[in-house]
Length: 245
View 1 (cartoon, rainbow, N blue to C red):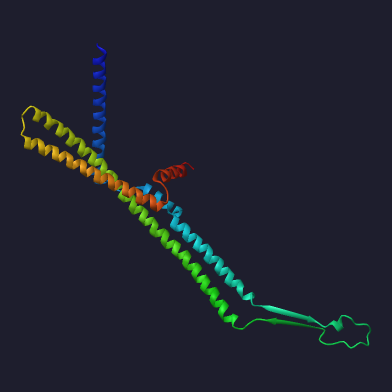
View 2 (cartoon, one colour):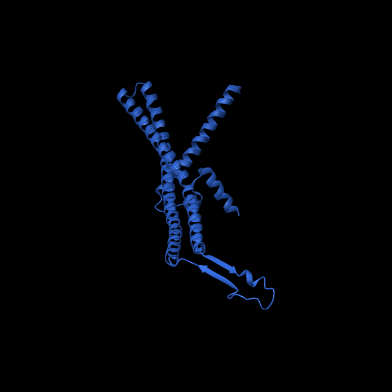
């Protein structure tokens, strides 16, 4: 057998295997989508939502919590800032030469000065700082919950568009095969130009739809990555690493 003929037969066999494999994948996808028990629920989305704490937004709130806590602690101790004391000792009580020397009483004076207004303003300021700290903690809880919800929604969008893309690729493959058959019939003058043009137009429409879906996949991916604060590949690698532990 000539080498050229062997090469042709090899390429033909590979093409057949590839076609069978694609048809099997296509059938598996269609079977999964047509199954009434098919859902878009995926534990991976919840795993990604667990990475919400890595977002820049929550890191900023963490700094706000830290600052509010310091402010609260500072206000609690600020009552002592205006506390002043004085102490006086009579020199004559130190330099007593004999018992006949007149000793002044009291021997020393001690005074403590604290503005009475501080008992009202300082506790109020401390309560205000404490309320701001607690409010920032609650804000983080609400933001985390909202961010988790956004991540779950973004992942659902990303999964939906990826599934649509897989289905659309199957549609394109079918339309391409149909167009090839129409093209051959048109060459053999067995169909009209209108029929051939309609087949060509239908194939082009499926290709345009693929571009739209592919754009949606990319946008959903960008939104998901913005929410989790890292590339999707890095997030998936981190999840896989956690599963091994």
